[in-house]
Length: 470
Picture 1 (cartoon, helix red, strand yellow):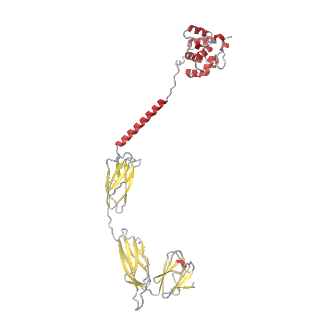
Picture 2 (cartoon, helix red, strand yellow):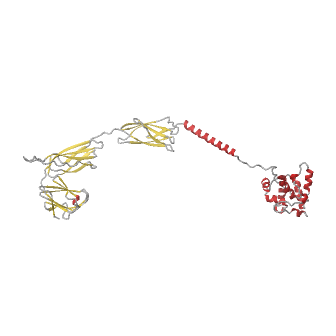
Picture 3 (cartoon, one colour):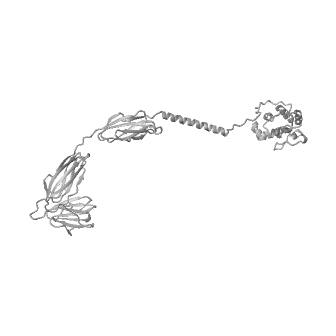
């Protein structure tokens, strides 16, 4: 069998057995070096490589990891399949490193390789290949104790940082300053009822605003930018405030506080002025629709109230005095911008006292009294539209009134019309339930609950009569 035939190996890299020449290197006695060399002398290089690895007790994958030589190249060397290797230069480097790893003499291995290839006289260039370590390096491993120790160290460092920050906070109290108003003493307008305080403080601090005469302080919170604001109530006179800051977590209070005095002057309260132009005091009117008008200054409202005094004239001997009429409800209006006012007042026949009262915002009042006598002559009729709309046509002493015209007119809710006649007044309404009447100062209400068209005739001597006039 030729040398080339001996170098051919199966794919599993296991060398063929050669009978009595196959010797287990692990069974050799290290002391008998000559016997070992004698046993190896009859082996081919691939067989020696395989036997050495087998004696070392490692597989190809372990050898690959330790020598950094691919397992396919290691297997090719153990089979003697040199064509699988990348070239003679690299092959020599692989053989040298592998021989050192297996505990063989690298020069002897290279010499046998040349001899079995038949190029023992050829001088190859020397390749300086890195020598592998005699023993593979152990990979870096991190045990559970190391992980626990690292975590504990991190926790301790974080806790120490937290304690340091808290000690720093506890050691430093918050600060506070007032930026509005810019002066510690100021005067506000006479009508001021509140003021907005603004300032700066330690971020997150609680601002406490204490006012003289009040037990509980007003509180605000400084934002992340340190700005704060609070609206305080003002009273007439001197308002004294003390502004401080408190850290809500540590409870420390600012060492310096800000004092502030805001003075609101007392306004001079003046009573309103009132002038009544109509009616004149002691006037005698023939119509119960009395306009009360005049002018008021420094007044928010003007109220008009009437009180019945007695009959317009003394009753004849033996006659009973007339029944006292019901006084109208007081009427309140707001004066115009120029202070003028006008209030329509409906009074029944008799003597009346009219009280006109102007009231200011400070509830100061001024009252003017007027005495009037209502002595009706003829027919005085007040027509009022309420709770809807109504079409009206009116005849005064049997003649069509110029107010409504021959075709009549539609009036909206709240409209009040006054008509005066010598003998009679007739009113046709398209909405009887929304048309109300007051005859010579007597409230007659509406004449029907139904919303039907009706015509009514009014005289001073008899009750109203329903007619067919259209």
